[in-house]
Image (cartoon, rainbow, N blue to C red; front, side, top):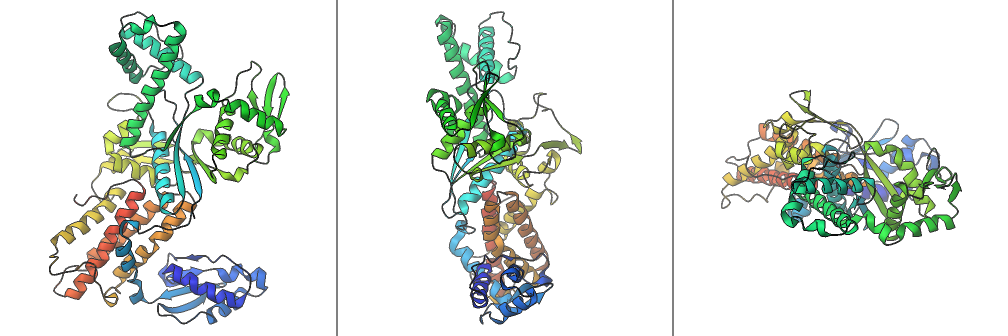
Length: 545
């Protein structure tokens, strides 16, 4: 329906001006302002040098006759509002029945190649709630972008180099020897979690004393590789249970082994973006137009790399792979890192606009109105595994994705577990389950739930549903375009609300066969759309609750 309105406007505007303009059509929050509205007349003011109301009148006068628009009105300074014939709204049902689980697909991305990097936690401990929000938002975004015609690759950057891995290796060494019965202290900067204790026990059970027969160099090299693999496999299991998966796990160590860091430094040097000062090597980030407040060290005076250097090499590798857009999801503590990373992209000869960084704000956990910081089970900080065990994957994902990623989020354990309309996920899933229950009661020999009469779907509650259904592909497209998965949660919440109001005011099954079939067709379309929407945020649509 919206596409038809845009098509009418394009034809009309072409009669008013030869200029090519992008026509934007919105769905007004207040139905008194029409079913669709556009500000194209205001957009054309500078081009045509006329009062926008006069331009609006010219556009309206040139709109071709059609069978689905009831009236067109000009409002305010020049808005053009379209009122659609109610009986024509039902046509969306045919499209939903035809497309099924593909309803909502669009081609906003037009095949653009995108690499999303997310979670990328150090393999030194359990995933925390911040990682959980990162994963829920990013995985939802992947699903939404794929639905919108983008070619998306999912990547986890494995920080398997640097001091944290040295500390992990030393911690594994201590725990392994303790498990063998040696009286040995943990290193000062070691990792003391239960997972590292378990790692030591696994090593002792699998290898006994045999690892101690290796040379010190071979022994530490083995421990390093084994520990990273052990920790990473644990992270992968937790993420898989959270329905978050990846196409690639990219190793930081590979950047060293392949010589890509040296190649990157050589590239920056050849492009005259690095200089020597006080024995260190610096990148001129302040000259690269991204707002970084000072130049950044790449190689310290002692000859070691800063953590920024392999990051630049990693992003060069990404860009060299031919992606049109790179999207990184970072934690709130990385906000200041963005300008220098964009500067590095510019320095490598690419446009900084190729890199989009989404900053994930903090999550506060609440139960019965009180902040919760420690797990009841372990007495430690709450992990992704705790979250899954406490409220389930569906609730955890939905609650973490339903607010804009750049805002702080209060995650209410009590609400997430509550089976009432106050729980936003329960409210949506119950709408789907209720529709399934109604359809199970229907005698399929008597009623066809995909046959309908548009004229029997013109009451206010049916119309509200039909408008919402027609809007779904646009919501998906906008969520993809603006990298905002929470739009899907907002949408499905409003669709569920429209259904609950419809159900509370209309009798779905009655003696009137035509009316019953029309209502059954309507709620079947709602069922399909709710399921499709929940799938985009990685949440199930149960048929019974």
